[in-house]
Amino acid sequence: MKNKEKTTGNQEKQTTSILYVRLPCWKIYPGGVIYVADYIHKQRPDIQQHLLDLALVAPSERKRVLREHITDMQPDVVAFSWRNMQSFGPHPEDDALGVVMNFDHSPNLFRRIKAAKDAFSIVSDYTLSRLRNFGYMKMVRKMLPDSRIVVGGTAVSIFGKYVAEKCPPDTIIVIGEGEDTMLSIVDGFTTPVGEYFHKGRDGQVEHRERAEVFDLSRLSAVDFPYVESIFPDFSSYLGGDFGVHTKRGCPLQCHFCLYNKIEGAAQRYRDPVEIANEVDTLNKRYGVKNIWFTDAQFCSTKRSTEHVEQILDELLARKTDISWSGYLRLNHLTPGIAHKMLATGMGSLDLSFTGSQEIIDKLTLGYKLEQQMDAFRMFRENGYTNQKIKLYMPLNAPGETIATLRKTIDKIKELYDLFGRDNVLPFIFFIGIQPNTPVERLLIGEGYLKPDYNPLTLNPFVIKKLLYNPQPLGRLIGRAYLEAIEFSDITLDPYSEYIGRATMDIIERELNKMAPTAKPKRVFRILEAKA
Image (cartoon, helix red, strand yellow):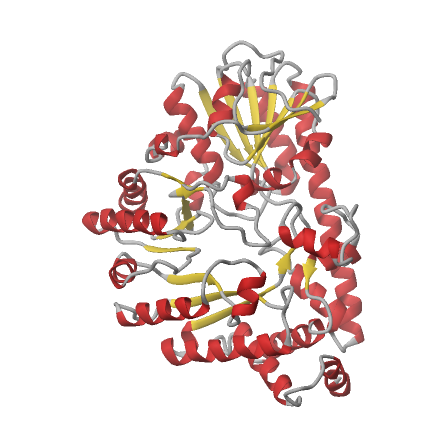
């Protein structure tokens, strides 16, 4: 692939119409494509735009509905938004984690066989989904041979090279933020900006790295009345969570994360007044109550925490009645900011958590555990009522040991004492290995993955490895998780113990059966005997 600063294609005239097509996924507010469409409208108000959300169309009707939109609109540009691509990616419509746990660790043969069938079904669904998505693009190319196709979204930002190879000719695959790239596309694509792959009409793929910085302060509050006019299904999302972003970029180097590559290492900020105007309009005009701040982390650095406080001040001034959440880091929290977070309607405290400084350091998360625990106490003392404490715990990450597991359990107990057991929700997850991350390089170096492995493989045995839960602790954690689920299934009481808490209790129970100096292999003997 070649880097290319200036690209020309067949479309050198200015665009007059754009059809955005949100490719099928679970029902979740399509905030990314709405930001792009809103930006294009404000820069080029004469362009006709329309958003078709295939997530809201019955599977059997999607091809027909897309064909009708293409026929009726005859757009100059068709821009596809693709959210998820990996078969083990988080997805509320399947349980890849539960399937892997049952296949690898269930002592019940029937459940292992059923898990194998379920795994085949999940992989098959994802295979067909990918084929259908590329099929939609090929149909557009056939119907509109002179129009330009654009593909963007989360999945594309991670797997752009793969997508480029499969797309039809004259397709632009946008990596990361797309507002400025899309503007250069609609202006003729004679002097493009941003990072993208371009598959030319000759089938050759060229790559351009981002050479400029998009000024995020140019993103004013979304014009939702305009969005309604181009997105007839907008009202379908009013009862759920709405995503609002306040910044882009991340200077941190967490071992498993790609945000600092996709969005850049330098944090850039939207105007707090515009952010508050956007949230206030959603709340007071449309009755939206739940806001999710979609940043990599809502606050992390000292500067970003100051930016958050400015947003909170604006929301307080407007008396906006919302419940909001977002991924947090608590390094630079002050009692005043904690109070303002709770006063503006923070519905839950969402953050990565491990009770071991060794694992924090191993994953290069960049904070001190005791600093985080002090921040929890700060919330408790500055207006906390009954907000949920959601702990996203990368169990069995590289470097995890019996000792670090015990430390995590101890810290969770401290949080039970601080907030009440029912308000603390440990979320059990495992690191998903993404391409071009430090953890991928580490595991290739250790021989866990082959250097030439395919991150989009459909081989179920490789997919299992990409959900990182290796031995010797994998079975201990896996069977604890399965036992917790079984307990939840057989108790019909909807207020029965939360699965994450139950899992950690069971892990503690099994660890307590062991001698303090027991080797990890001892875990297997205990569990095998129990099975």
